[in-house]
Length: 168
Image (cartoon, rainbow, N blue to C red; front, side):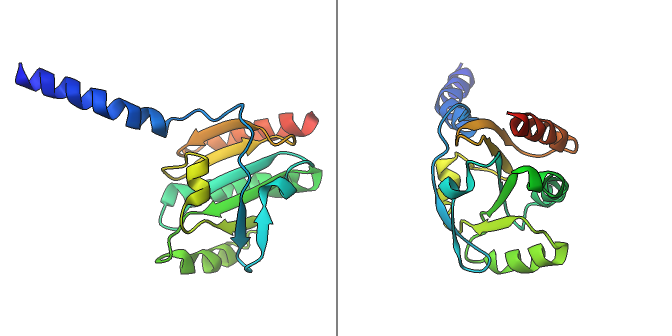
């Protein structure tokens, strides 16, 4: 009986935490942020929206699925960037590992914008508590999609969404 009570109490306490990880932010206005890029220049989200969809990819150098996802997102970016699609790869690496970001990006020759969120302030605004975490914003600045994690094939859904948003 004590075990059942303990399990019930545990579930009651942990459910809000689990629900918080699955926070549905779609339909909301995307919170603005201003982060520095790899060259130390500040990029503001509100100045990136308007010409087409913007994909926010929260990632970190220590996250293997993030690196796999980024390679796939790069292909989508290269294909649709001239039509107004933007990709902001937001590194959540801390001060201890942020030095690895620029060399990694250069080694892959990625051309999309990479931003540094070393204190995870922007990640918290988007409820990105685990990596990778993806958010799609339409040209009006509204969040139309969010997704936690990455499995091979997820990028197909993103590409389909990019095509749909570019057509609007």
